[in-house]
Length: 400
Image 1 (cartoon, one colour):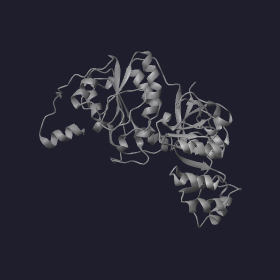
Image 2 (cartoon, rainbow, N blue to C red):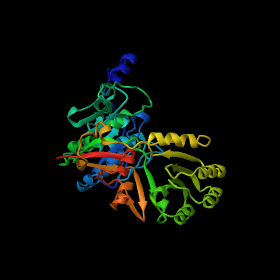
Image 3 (spheres, rainbow, N blue to C red):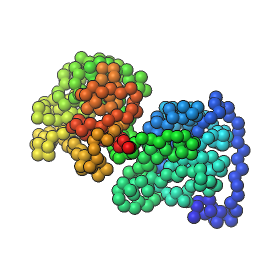
């Protein structure tokens, strides 16, 4: 039973066509689609920014803009005309009513689109789609994507609605970006089909990060962030590490000791957020003892084999736990097993700045393959450093 029918049954009121007193709001263009990307926790799709990055140039060629509506304090998505938080409900209704299409998660705006018979692409997660979909609808112009169906396919078992405010993992995130992109283009009658198929999404892909290698000084403000992750394990010098900490607060990742006077100086200025030390054969216990004495928060990791990591754990027992990091293997990942690496491409949520250029991975730095855009899709590489960073990648297979 649909929610509207439940309310009707309990209240004794008949279901009738809605009446909405829309209020005119001017926009600087006529052709546009609307998007409401944010709603509540388990209903939030974490990859809308990646969807819009691909859709934006496609729609621009058609003279179509993207208008982002929603509530206060929501983050703008690059490529959208941002009006979220500045419109009343009546004005939002006017904007949706006059759009070419609406894209959203399960929210009130999806019901507005159904009421106005506006083409709709909507994403669902923690409930039965049949119960919460727009009551007034036209099945011919609605594409409703159910995260539970994709999750069921991925886990090879039937997933029922959780009805939970929070989900872990979130079923909605199993919806691949290509089905959203292709759905929008289909309903807008745009002759485009995304040429890739999602085969793997790293657990940390939703966490957008900016790193820098200390071979130069990176302007953190140009990325809209307050602090940077400095990859001293990727190379560079202590001189540039110091110069970077003159510019902004830093989290430092290293696999070798760093001058303790330098660390003491910048810790006294609250420039060091934390230090991550990757332990290997040349590990230095004295370095860990000193950074703890200085008062720098630190975490210990190691890529080494289990037996050697167990030795590290005993050695550093009085200071911290040594966490083992495993290098993923292609055949151990069901959705990647058996695939030709030459058919695979990836997007990275972790951008590394090296000498003023952007790289999607350390592997790309080693091969000197910079990118022009933070969301660029580039070929995968069967190389150990690429697999080490797999948790930050959205991996796609090129379609024939």
